[in-house]
Image (cartoon, rainbow, N blue to C red; front, side):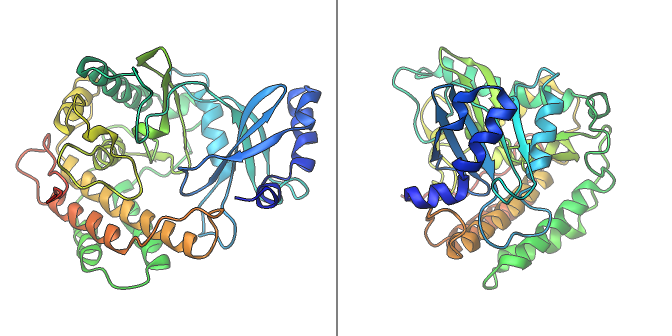
Length: 360
């Protein structure tokens, strides 16, 4: 990204004074901005000045799908969770009025630590014991989130909970139809079968992160057993906790499985626990009924395939600040086919079907 593109997306001349007003620190008037790659929906920039570092989140450029990229919603849930045991960055500034970036945005604290992506720092969580501990911290963070009473933190009306899964199927079917460029038989079948699924209502609606995975979390630099921040709350709502667990299983790639195009495959490395261990750990920590986990894992595949198609469309339209992700057609089909496999895995809800293995 060129300096001119960065300036047009972050408007330091306007944002600087706003940060001074929000922080009371004159040093934020002059700052630099750098795109943090890896974000495939909203754009994330690190802002740096003599006062330190902050993180800016803003939507991509161009046409946006209805109800997508809601910056105020992200900021709202992080502020609400700030009083709980769920670790979230503090919100510094929320803006939606013309005259700053001319789009809704927010600025939050930067939390120092390790974000596990394609690799880990040398010497960090390099033993099976530490990698299991890191996975346990991830699952404990999810269980902690799901234990929060939404009403107690002002989020009782954060989302409709009736027929949560059925509405998710309809939502992601609409998103898929809005961005698809060709017919994908596996997506058609998955949409039809999920639409016909008889979903049970959860015993208790929980806060659902909507994109809970290893690289949306920050771990302490000196201790992989300690989760210090959960990031990227764009898809958060109220609903069934298994929606989060099912999606985490989609992201958790095991040894020998296909390396995904859009998300890291760090967990293929030796020493990381398998998906079954994650499920067992979550079951130990929560009161969730695990019966429908295969169906929620299939729903997670459907959602992720629709997201992948949306990313492809935004990148093709030049809305992703110059980031390129290649041809995602085959990846969308692969994800959907894995969803069908998961939906057929009803013999043991604690052992969702694996994604297709890599023949190489």
